[in-house]
Amino acid sequence: MASASFNRVILMGNLTRDIELRYLPSGMAVAEFSIAVNDRRKTADGNWVDEASFFDIVLFGRTAEVASEYLSKGSPTLIEGKLKQDTWEKDGQKRSRVKVIGERMQLIGTKSGGGSGSDGGVRENYSDQSNYVNSSRPSQSVASQPARNTQPARDAQPTGDGPGYEEHDIPF
Image (cartoon, rainbow, N blue to C red; front, side, top):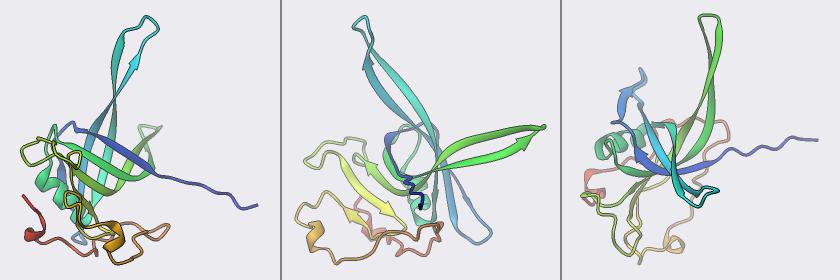
């Protein structure tokens, strides 16, 4: 019997620190940052409590460069990707951590951070596997876009060979 697995995560939160952008020897951009995701729940005594969870995010290629250019500490964003566990040994102790390898990123709100409007504040979608999408244009439906396979190869890592984005594609 073949085993099945599924690894997908979608998180929306605010950056806890500015993005660290670096380049691999191959020239591919890598952005690392953390986001805080808040959860509100009611306690047994009837009081509301906010709990924050913190997640490490890694983006590659043009998506990493766009994130570095437009996001800073406190910026809201939506990240879709997969979980990856890193393991290492330090001082004879085995250590591990789970991080999110981001495959898609959406900038939330406007340049001024407003986030109001009929689109719910979601402004742009960036991914190395898909073209630029401006969700604030309701006249451009998914059905009117040409069909394309945007699913990455099962074990492929981002290559940075995506379509790229020109300055005039970014509306702000």
